Length: 406
Figure 1 (cartoon, rainbow, N blue to C red):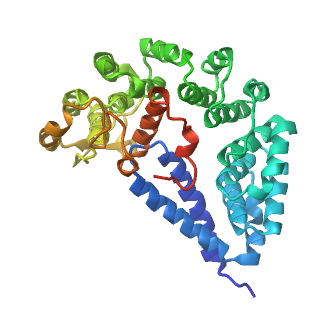
Figure 2 (cartoon, rainbow, N blue to C red):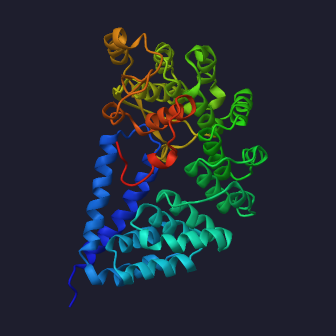
């Protein structure tokens, strides 16, 4: 006779996967503050506890997930087993790690990074040194989260050059997490990599590690604006000095960067951007108006949705019939008068600041309490700025570990 109800246990297992996927997206999102992130992580923990109730039945229940070729079932199974902490559970995770490949290995690696994997640290250290590249970088990422990674540029270089994009992506994440110096030539190659994930990971490492060529790369993107360049330009804007406001405003106004371009203004954070955003919020183009409204909300920490929705036209510009129109995306339009009223109310307090985020003056840095009020995107930008301009020694790792700390 089963000591648990399978349907309820299955719900916990599926919800753990779903909510962890949400957490991944939330880590860089302007839509999540620490409060929302804390609520999400509490829900994750509740479902973990629901699985741990299974006790000695847990390994058998999650066995199929641990063997899955899909990432999230493998993650949820390995994480639950690590949290149970039994010798049998640890052995199962260890065996799955050694057998893992592809998405399955990715899920197990993430579980090891965020779960209580201390008994497996010696194994992970050995794997990082001697295992084939896919397993070596999985071990290295997990070790980084446990502050147990000892790596030199000579050890990391072959992994950064590996023929497999997945290995290169992981190796660049390790470079960022560890604050590892990397030869400039490798940065330059990776920032032109054909794999978007490799480019994104290398961009993060280049920015956080203060690679001088990162600025050159961003300026080249500014000279050839395209939607996939917004992330890099926003990172640059986050660390530029206040006197660069004219250049940043010009970039944020560049239609070729697409509807997300207003996040460049939000990342820069200078109050001079507010009037620009208010003007953009009046645009007849729904994507422009909504994008500017989102950036305004991120800077001032106030919701300005009007309740009115607009349908986005097809990306290819083609006409659609009545049936196809039902599947077009919709956006919330901003309430511009309400936004203007709010700005006039807070202008005396914020107009003389050089950077604002979530309605706070962050010009000279902030304390732990106010840091906890920021959205996740603004927290990341503030930390990047502190690392590059104020001597803070943290890395992106502190913004991603589970649970998030204020």
